[in-house]
Image (cartoon, rainbow, N blue to C red; front, side, top):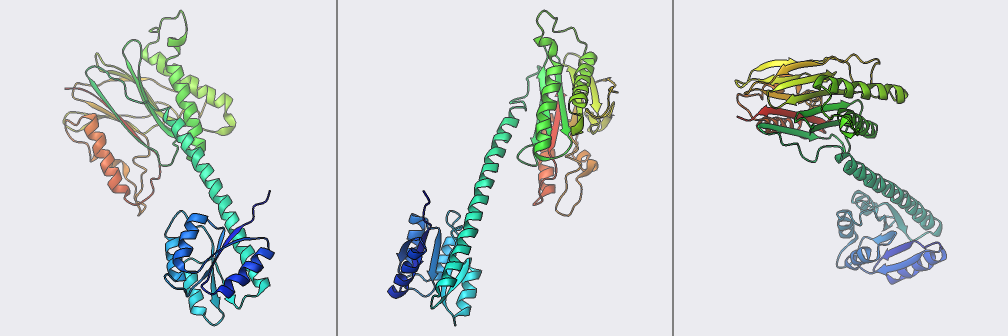
Length: 392
């Protein structure tokens, strides 16, 4: 059953109201009426008409007052309003349009023009309603995607006796291509990583979940194989297994997508500070001494994951001394831009490094600096950092 559009007629002249009611009923519209601006505003809120025919000169509250209040209210501002005005009152029409009126209807009323003005305004409203409905549907879907994607990030970082681990993650949009992870293996070693999937938006977010799942599953595959010793992989073997399996699967199964990710992944032995790592095309991780100086840069040891097969990943090893902090991050930090188009850059990041910083202190300092640098600009890329240090 078709529902008749409801039109509110606002005019303090009974003759005008009677005429419009008769014409609109002949055009199969439902009508309601108000004799002043205050009553009109109340009926707009309570009746939610599809269209308002609004006279300007009225007692209690004029048409301008109604327009101002309606357009200031997010719940009702989408209701189209046609200003009713005499032919010789062009200034009133112009002011009404500036205040947000959809169109105007000259007095005396001409039936053909009345019909055309109303049909045009209702058609625009229907299109806006469809657009709003579609955008709200997209928003719900994006919120769902955001909530699902959150489950692919650690709810909390693992507790490692004698060590502090901190992370910071901020997506540029509702969903992200960046991700990070940290988890303990049965032998007590800590696996951690930061990664950045190429591209932006939904596509990158979908592949982020795939990359993260593959790396996590491959890193811990021996834990889920009955009858196998969960400690039979060396750290180097485990890292090569995780990166190579993920790399080969992506290339062989999703070759047409041409999706890849830069990844820094490491396994830390908390007993002696030995760090085994692979840098798959990511920005160098920094080892920072207790004096605040950068002792080493853990540069790339292979290509991004998902680029070439057979893989060319090289495992390297270093030691984190008692006073040293490891900082790893994605390129969203140096590539961050402000409203002038300036890049945050590596030098600004390194300028925040101070002596004897804890992971939490350093990441908080970087977060504050990035926020101040971005200012009113839109965040260009996802931002991900992780820091690890032995507690003093």
